[in-house]
Structure formats: C-alpha cells, structure tokens
Image (cartoon, rainbow, N blue to C red; front, top):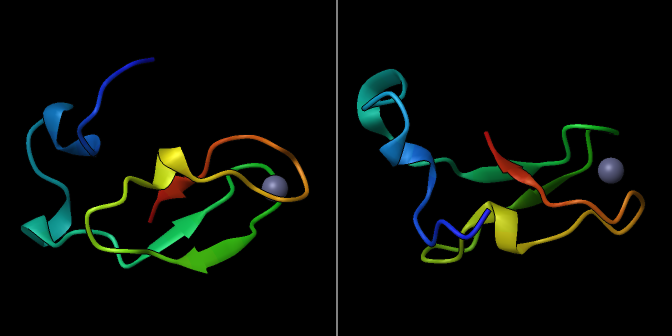
Length: 55
Ligand SMILES: [Zn+2]
C-alpha cells in the first residue's frame, strides 16, 4: 500500500467527482475533517490505530 494518490485511481470517478470532505475510520466510524492535499489514509484513527478512509 504505497499509492500516494487518493482513491481516484480505482474505478475512475466517485459520485459526482467531488473530493471527500471527511475522513472516516472504517472500523469504529470515527470521523475527522479532511485536510485538503492530505490523503485520508495518511491519517490514523486514534482508537483503532488503522488508516482512515475518504468519505
Ligand atoms: Zn477507529
């Protein structure tokens, strides 16, 4: 898992092509406001210690 890009490389576009505005933990649902230019997966859930995902 060394892809530097966001999720756009997979399957083309997401709904509407809008970038995610939040990062969410897939395990516990923890959300944090996304910082533009910072991939969600570079952030970690403080509870689960796993990478967050773009919403
Ligand atoms: Zn979590």
